[in-house]
Amino acid sequence: MPEPGELPTVKPEAGSGTETPTATPSPQSAQEQKPEQPAKQPETILDDPIMASLAEDLKELLKVEKSADKLPVIKPVEEAQATTPNPETVKVQEPVKGAVKKRSDPAKVASEVFDRKMEELKGKENLPPLPAKPAEQPKSDDTSDLTDEQLEELADAEYAEQSGSEKFKGFKEKIRTFYRKVDEWVKSHESDAERTFDDTDDEFKEFVNKIRPDWSGQRDRFRIERISEAKAEQKLKAREKETENKINEAHREAREARYAPKIQGIVSSITAKYDEETKSDDPLEREVFDTYRNASAELCSDYLRILHGIDTISENNPPPVRQRHDWLVNFVVSSAEEHAKRKPEETMRDGKKFVTPAKMAVLRNSKSHEAEESWTFSPEDVLEMIRLKAIELAKADIKKEESRIVRRGFVRVKPSASSKQAENPQPMNPPKVISPPSHGVPEASTTSGEPHLGREIVAELGLDR
Image 1 (cartoon, rainbow, N blue to C red):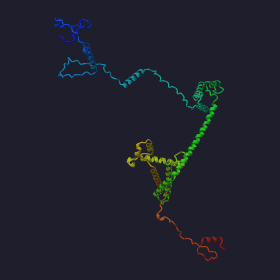
Image 2 (image 1 turned 45 degrees about the vertical axis):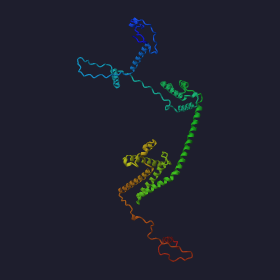
Image 3 (image 1 turned 90 degrees about the horizontal axis):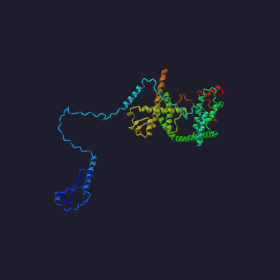
Image 4 (image 1 turned 135 degrees about the vertical axis):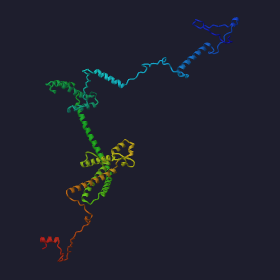
């Protein structure tokens, strides 16, 4: 029995497409007919059973959609006792064919294709011909096959292009094409023995005049202007070169005035040290040592002059200077390479390793940190090397000269200290000086009983009478 305020149960009729609400009366209501009370109106939408049912349906639909976005929760299966299956009843599942396709090796496929093509070509006498190599077109800038007159015309055409006139735009290439066409025409008519290919050949002359580019009577003007500008440019370059030479010479003279006294002082100190180490009273040794002393002084001076920019290494130098410069370059390079071949511990200086001057220049230009960890020959090192090399060569020459003297059968005796002459040698019998008689004093009868050379000459000539 429904409580007051409840809605009656609604059931659809059987076989009906629509749901028709019907009231199911209770037994008590059948016996006693009570007066119908008005239905209570729902306070909200959810109190309406139809709307409430629709809301429930929407909730279920939303739950289904949300569950589709989530992975299903797999519940753990209870462990079952292991049983030995019957081999007769267990069916082994065959692997699914074609489920995973194995990728072919590209190198193997290429090899198979190549072998197949070669098999197809076997037995065929006529293989496919190779494609013909296209004929090389002559380059437009290649002028090796042109005459002097054609080169002059090309130069005029290039100058005409630079004039900016639309008429002469691309005119140089037109002239070049004209020359090629004339050459092709001549080659195609070479078999005709009557052809002369000059002004007397009317057909040739007509062909040339027909395809020749039109200068419009302005070639002479372009040619004169081109030659005039070329001469003016040459004069300008000559003046610029002359001015540059004068400036360089002024800088050289300034550097020479600044460094020449210093260079002379350095060379003097080097030669003084050389003389100190090569003292000798032997004439042969002294001559050889002096020769190499002068040579080493010139080399040291040349090196310092090059170092300070006073002189340059050039083919225009006089032969003696050029020879000394070549010797300096070869000496420094070979000495550096020889020094670099030594063990690193033998060439270390202040914890730095040795590198050649050429490598040091590369390191400094590249601003490498290795330059700070390396050292090379300094100017002082080179000057000392030149001095020691001069002494070495001088001693070798002295030894060679002594060997040559011995081979000739001579015995070389070096001068001893006792054979030295006195600084102020005195004669054994010094001549006696006879003073002439004074004016007014009678001459003595006998001035000296010793013979006198002058008196003997006077007597011999008969001038004493």
